Image 1: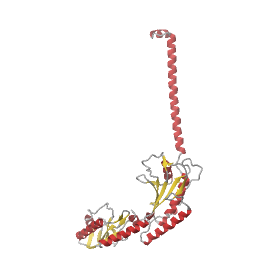
Image 2: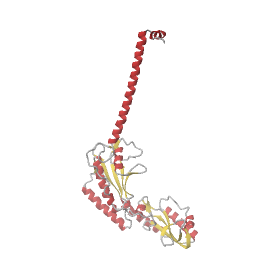
Image 3: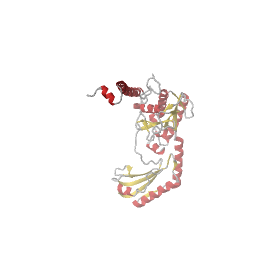
Image 4: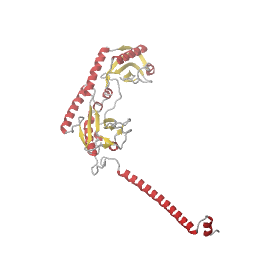
Length: 357
């Protein structure tokens, strides 16, 4: 076996030079091992810190943006006491529809009738409907397997875009006449001018009842980031809309109100950016039943949100929402609900949902 002196000599080095070289190499290896262990330790500690941070930032009303030590508000705790609305299928309603009756010479199958309706508009601005009188003397939407002795076709007179115009009405009347001719049916067509006037009156009533009521929460200082608002809404069980623009407060399958955060979009915007100047709760009054007390629900929730977010309540004009203002709003809403009832179109009904769409 070659000796150390011979090995050093073969490399052209003295024994001292070779020894110093080996010592330096050993130190280099030790330093590399130490650095590797240090990096691993830092990675483990960093991962542990992330876990701890996630565990301590659970969204909730009692711990939002450093606001701690509060008793957690129970948003929606009284939902069980709120009466569920009676849900009915949309049917022709002479209060908001122009209705044309067709008396058939004999019972005709739904399949044959539907065959003549293929060219009727499916996505018209004003809803078209067709119902038939079945064997049990009930009116129902015409189905393939049914048989009918009478028909009634209808077009909606108004919606949130305004009253029906002469062009849309004339198209409907023309197709109703064509259907009567095809089925050899007797038809009663109302005077077009009267229908147009009725549509204008309905639109005027709708405009007086079409109230979008808002309560706004503003920060006492600074601005909120979108993730804070998202945490609040998620914690409260709100449902995010498909377009990401608002959260829905839903009770018994009814959207009681919507929560909007400034002009933000929860799906597209940066959640961490602190640029939210206000949160608004919006009640679409004619689409929510009076019996559900939607304004009270929204007001109570707004107070809880203000407490959780360290904010203040203001009205649409930015003024503090004081008790006197709440009483005035409640009285005004009562008058609107009463007017809708007297018109035969109560808030939250199927007819109201069609009219205010």
